[in-house]
Length: 372
Image 1 (spheres, rainbow, N blue to C red):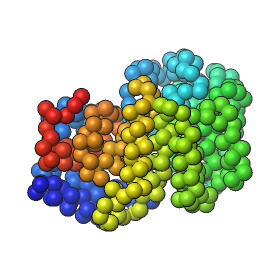
Image 2 (cartoon, rainbow, N blue to C red):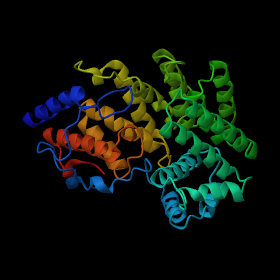
Image 3 (cartoon, rainbow, N blue to C red):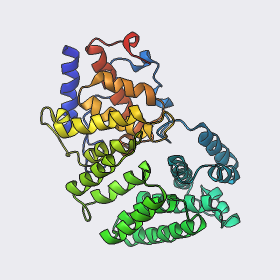
C-alpha cells in the first residue's frame, strides 16, 4: 500500500497547487506524467500520450476520413454529403456538426490570414457561398460562430455580443432550412448562455428541442450549462434539471447519467474533505452513470462522454478496477469533458490513466486480471 499512499499524498498536494482547469470547478490534483511512482499504462496496451486524439470523445472513422479529406483538399463537398446522410434527430449529427465547426475554427486560429494569404477554414466560407440553402452547412456555420465567440472574445464585451448575435441569426436561418432538425436549436442553447436569455425565453427554446428530440443527450448537456451560469441558475436548479432528465429517461438512455454531469459542474474549487468522492450524492450519481453505460446501446455515440467523466470520479474515489474498466473502452480518444477543459487534454487524461493503473496494481491488479 505504500505506493498508493505516496500517490494519494501527491494528489492532495496537487489539489492545492496545480490550477490545471480553467473553470470554476478548480484544480485537479495530479501526479506529473512519467512520475517514478506511476505504473506503466503501456503494459495494458494503452495508446501513448502523443497518439491520443483530442478531436473527439470516441471513434467515428467516417468523420475522421472526411475531416482529413476536407482539410487536405479544402473542398467542403465530402462534409456536405456526410451530414446529408446523418440522421437529423440523432446524437451523431450534432457531434459531427461540432467537429466540422471546430476544425474550421482551429484552422482559422492557426492561419488567420493576411495580405495575400488565404485564412484557414476557407472551405466553410465557400460551402456557405456555393450552397446557401444547404442545412448542414448552415448548422456548421452557426456552430462555428458560437465557438468563435467563446474562444476569441471575452463574455460581456461588445465583440462577444456582436458575434453571438450573428450566431443567433445563423441558428434561425439553419432552423428554417431544416424545420425538423433539433441541431440549430441545440446550438442556440450556447447563444442563450452568452446573451443571457431570460428563463422564459430559454424555456421556449427548450420546448422546441423537446418537440424534435426529447431524449437528446447532447441537448441536455448544453441546457445544463445554462442552468449552471451564475446569472441564471443555482446548484439546486441544475441538480433539479439533471435529476428530472434522469427520472424520465427511457430504458437504455444515457440521460440517467445527467446527475453526474451536474455534480461535476459544481465541484468545489478545492476539496480536502476525506471521503467526498464516496459521499452519498457523488456515489448515487456515479451509480446512475454506470447503469446508463451498461444499459445503453453499444453504438450510442454519447457513451464515450459518460465514460470519460466516470474516469475522473472513479479515480478520485479510489475505485481503481472500475476506472480501468472505463479506460479500456475509451482509450485513444480524449475529446470530452473533463479533459477538454485543460490546455493539454492528452496530458490531463494520461495522468489520470497513470493514477488508475498505479492504484489498480497497488491493490493486486495486473494486465492479466483486467477483463477486456
